[in-house]
Length: 181
Image 1 (cartoon, rainbow, N blue to C red):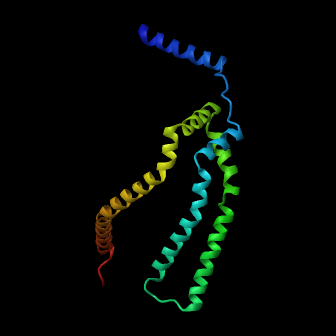
Image 2 (cartoon, rainbow, N blue to C red):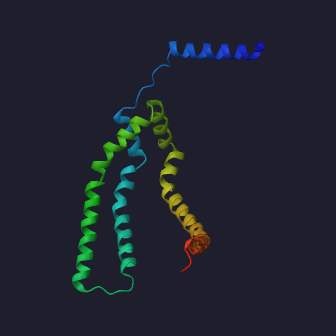
Image 3 (tube, rainbow, N blue to C red):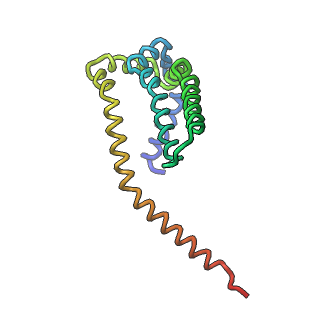
């Protein structure tokens, strides 16, 4: 073994030994109060509170799509409406801020250090941070529109792949089918 690889190997062993003997100082976990301040600044509750309305709209669209142009009788419409109202109420109960806030705090506390939380708080208190909070819904909306456009462009290609695979499957069935006797 030449001298350079030996020196590098010894340096690596020494660095590992030094690291094991002298652990890095512990970084403090964030306090629940600082995490609460951060999620308040980022208006997380506002986002969570808006989700049930979006879920309700999505459910209504899904129900309309499921029934298509079929007209429901008044009793059927009542059942569908009641199910939607119950589902929305259940969603608000199980996914409301009172349930999610402690989970957010636990996740942030487990994921970030106090200096990182402090840095995020400072950012979201700044002019740039306020702009991010104010404009992020528009960013998300524009992003979703672009993704939907891309998906529409992709759909014919996916359908062609599916058709090709179906044809290949049918061809293998013919190959495997023994001739009639």
